[in-house]
Length: 438
Image 1 (cartoon, one colour):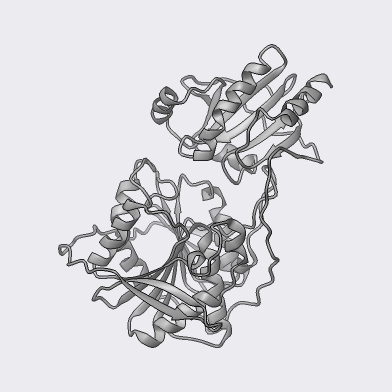
Image 2 (cartoon, one colour):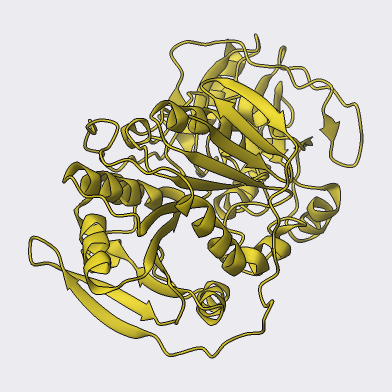
């Protein structure tokens, strides 16, 4: 069986693990080919699950034969996202917008999403198939794709089969278990190894998970899923959630989403769908992970050197990771937590300026022009390397931003953390002093 991965314009086909490049273009059409249609007010729908709990559904009615069940995880109002839903509706696609965390009174946390089972999504699928005659497309993004795939798996496990359930669209999916800390590559969630229903994975090229797309697709193909990946050139994750800068090509891909959904649905309908899942799910319960300091790295492996990379405003600047205690910080200006910790990093740099200590930050896949504008607003008192391709973050096994490493004078990692912290805590200053004294 052939499966496909499409990156930008070329289409790649894979049979087992052999990948052959076939130069085929999937045509992308603009949104309003025949002009916008009238937008109707959203309606509310309450659906009872098998435990008699209610799932709140916001219905954007439309007259085409396609129904999109869109799972979201945010509660705050995002005007640009709301506008997108209306544009999709005006193109003729009906949308059922569902916030499962809100319906089940769950906190908006990673642990809550990871621990959610497939029953709610299975309920939505069964209800939609019974009460409409439309073709159904499941859509979600980031970590909410996990409950989506669990629900699809549960529906299959019950012996269900219906060609009107065309498949699922996963926007920048995070199908990984929570990372233990920076520098330790996370594992794919077990659902990825038993999913075999038709899927489209939409992965922005400049997103933090872009470098792991091949591994994800390989796992899906191994489980028998006829999965297609669409890589969006020069675009970052969350590109349809706001009108802020998400990359040079982000506006084009935002405007194309309504027509893309139609195109994806047509492609998925042409793919074979299974009548049973690839296997059973085996997963563990996840607890919230709280960190207020660094995580000690027990195996002090040497790290990749930072020579040959472009320095902000200059070129061919090399930094040695031996002879000094070094804090390496991976970040990006679009990452809110990354920006929040910059002042404390500046203060840390100032505190140790007369000792053998240095901070080197590595900016993830941004351009010099964007960074220059950012620096005017937020001063950065330490060197910035430009990771234009994302290869450096991948080599350091950086999974989330910010991620930081403290390296001893011999070039070996002693501490790591994959979230923002206050770098002026007494315990962190003491840890740095201990490494300087060795």
